[in-house]
Length: 566
Image 1 (tube, rainbow, N blue to C red):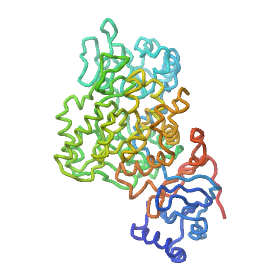
Image 2 (image 1 turned 30 degrees about the vertical axis):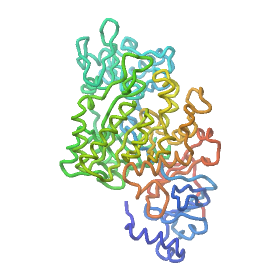
Image 3 (image 1 turned 90 degrees about the vertical axis):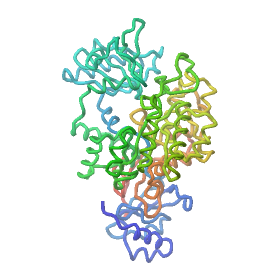
Image 4 (image 1 turned 180 degrees about the horizontal axis):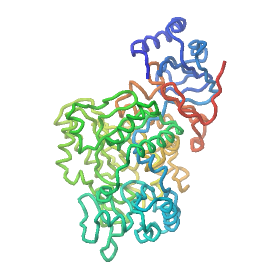
């Protein structure tokens, strides 16, 4: 992608402020968008009417009259006709390949009963050749009455020739049919691995349900996706991202094969999202060895972040708490297989940080969050002060005393607000109302001065930032049981939610000088919305749609035609 040098862009921006005539003498814009309501995210110029784009960057933001002066005979002019424009959404936590692959697999998220669950799996398996795996699924047993976990016996009869390994929507437990268990060598005599659980029936036989580290035995026998399968999944994921206004994603599962897929799409001119890929914390030396540090790459594809795990999930009762679950009083959750050996995990964190790599650790339960904060403090103590952009992914259940520690340790809270209106349907039966007060504590974190970076955790939740904004602002659970909001004191404003999906996510990846706000010199990534989310009733945000998505000055998605002016 061709760009003017940063210095020239800065001079062009200065020229716009000082002399429109001088700016016109220097350059004509490739594209101008006029006649809109532009939320810039820039405190020095929060609102504007129009944007000029030159060489993939923003050249000017201001009034219609000022921006039209950038238009020449070859400039494309888009008439916004009063619509709202915001910076491109930056999803700070996705599993991009898995989500794209899941778009083509059996869809179980909304299966209303075990019978519907079984029938959908059987119908999908019937379309596959014998031996092909049935994967993904993203089922949610909390939709069923009673909310009991499925078993292999439920699906064996409809999948006699196809191994099945379908995950719950949180990704922390999955159901295997008998064929998949056999291929993985899991029997009644197989012990629970550290950080995992093989669910068993009253007679000691595996039910097919595997939690966290116990899933690894099945993953080990699933054939790897080839380059064509990866490319197909990434294309599907990019389309889904763009139609929802997502211009940047931070992929927490970017294996070397997936990174090669991104690279090939970039080389072929097909990549329509900017990607920051994360590698497993335990493999930090793979990056540190050749001297790669945080932010290595270019404006389209970067690496240098490491993803670790402290625990599992609330829905799988593997999130790690100080106190037991109310509905499963025999457990308070599980540390991840990484954190079972906490000293070894800390050594990895210290080594990776010393090598200049960024740390991002999944923590759901209050004990998991407190433990990772302790470990981050020790990393800083050992390696000395610097700008680390430490992150906790999810930061889901927090004690009041730990919220201030996020700010003190400069830890970014990378959170997914859609989970609040999803889990809020049933979370209190797990942890009770008192612990729920510190659940998805957006307001408390912001008030403590903590940077929020919003995302979706897709495939776990929809990659739809507008629904995430709706969730953060209203906290109205999906079942309609909390019209005033679940834990309503943790609501935030629309502007705060949008900022978390744009500038906050850019800060979390160390890219705030490039993206996250609409101001001269930054990448021309923006979204045109069907309605003004800052003016309508927040409850109506659920119905707002993305009309157009612009990446680097190019339209990568249009829901309906954006008419060109003269």
